[in-house]
Amino acid sequence: MNDGDSSRAEAETSADPEAARLGERLEFLFAHVQPLHRRYTLQEVVAGISAAAGDGEPKVSVGRLWTLLKGKAGNPTIGTLRAVGDFFGVPQAYFIDDEVAERVAAQLALIAAMRENDVRSVALRAAAVATMSAQGLDMVRSLVEQSGAFDSTGGKRPDEGQAPQDAAS
Image 1 (cartoon, rainbow, N blue to C red):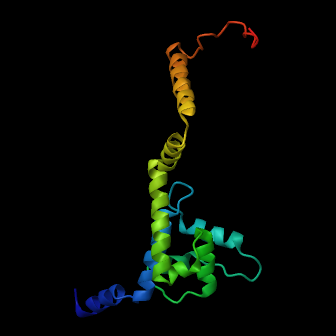
Image 2 (image 1 turned 180 degrees about the vertical axis):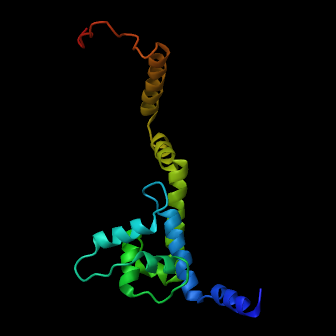
Image 3 (image 1 turned 90 degrees about the vertical axis):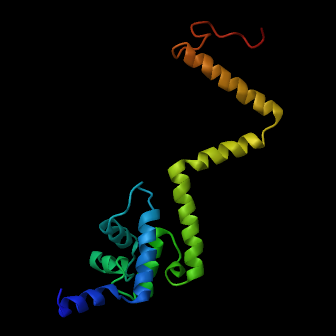
């Protein structure tokens, strides 16, 4: 590598620290905000921002979003930060305030972990069981036992084929 190549490589790696921080925060959003159960593409984000933008509101190009994401460009407009923040559901302060960024990142990481492990449904079930009365627990136990009888008969209920019994009898 000659001196010219070395200087070019140094210039590429010594990016503006603010641009790099913004890029890291954008990357975090791409990695953790995944309602499609996969990472958004740049085109999807740009299309979403464009679709939500009203007349005169800022839009972002794929190229501009890529340079922000890679930390190669700093100083986006407030409108750009607002548009990207709105798309990902974060306040624009996420991009500039370290405390807000930490709080939002913690919340998004927790949501992502819950999604991955389906913790939400487990936690809701545990909370429901913890607050049930003894009568409620007996009812759940009975339902579980009945569902076991249902499954062990090849999908047929033990009383299937019998006429419904009169409630008065």
